[in-house]
Length: 588
Image (cartoon, helix red, strand yellow):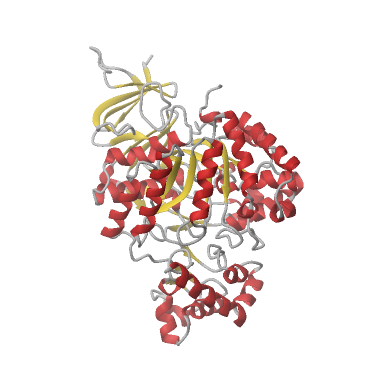
């Protein structure tokens, strides 16, 4: 009988802790790393399977703290896109959004919410979700039971918690009563007893960048301080868990008051806060100011960490599906409703006038447009449907079309969308993306003591965003191509530090006795495919729905709990993932 299940032989080990790389064999037994190096002992160690990692990097699997795979994990055990790109552990239920607790009669409404705010196809959720739970502890039991190709933690998303206690309309229109607040605290205790990792909220105010399906703010967007702090008291009482908060995004919402509130939240909870997000954009003063704030908070004992937006991202979208201009009331109004309702509103001169006014006001106030992804005039036209008369516009920017037609860029964009029955496809363009300055800004942002890679939004915005590819993009761009970040530092930010932030007890590093979540890859061959900006369309969601994806090349093997889940990009069908109650798969 062989001594080990697997030996990863001759690879360059980057263990996630910033220890300098070294060459060693790694032995795996019963899902754990049994030994690193020293396998000879006078005789050759034996294993059922030997993986030759000569010339390859062997590192801990990546930890993605910001995903929305709550629905998709029920039909896709590997949570692709993320699973293709070396992610071996994820956290569900971000931004306060999720599906537990939810009364049976409110399930359709919950799915409609997610179809807008996170742009997950409603028909796919309707066909693919199990809905064999009602309460949050029952949701955790479902996560435990279903096949998983990676490890899972789950926040308690605050929106469904509030709706369960207060009802939807009340939760959107008033603070909780003292009795309701106590009941939310009780339910949070119950969920934490069941193994939740903490709670999450989005708080963007009345003009939320991610609105509900009817265009109104999400429940937590207008949640009062006292209700949030009451939940923080639960974590303080238990001395466990952490909080994810989406708030005060540069140029979109919030400001100094939002940051001061997060400081108060950290004071009350006495637990880590994950602040979303820190970006490395055109103006380096944005991320420098945020990094200085994070450093000051931690100097004062407030454990606030920044989740860095590290992907060279772009959105490829049509106005049939797009929802990320919702912080503009006029755009929000125009892009909600049925297809015919959207078209009628987009043609309305008064609504168009309001769009232009709001854009001008944002530029005056913020020195930049409020449009996520950059100015509308810079959008590249990718596709015009079947209208050959408009084909000559493909490859032009909206600004160029506006100049040709003598129109405002917003009119040019809307007219093109209407002429193609909302099928005209636009690509956001950030002139900084991929530049030397961008790489410099990114390195400065991500090497702060308090930031991690990520914000994939995996499972969300499925028709226009492919954020799950961020680990591959980061390693190939920032480590290999530019040399701005060392390999050791990159894996610390991709695995060890996010695992530490999230309270993982035994993951995010390679060490004897730790679960064998491992990626083995060729750094020179690492690649996001087919294209960094556009990806490809695949019809692999329930109910025949499509999504935009990007796959990976260069990963020789991906292992979860000691089993190979992907080999040379192909899924093995293994589902060794675990539900990590209280940050671990073991009983506590």
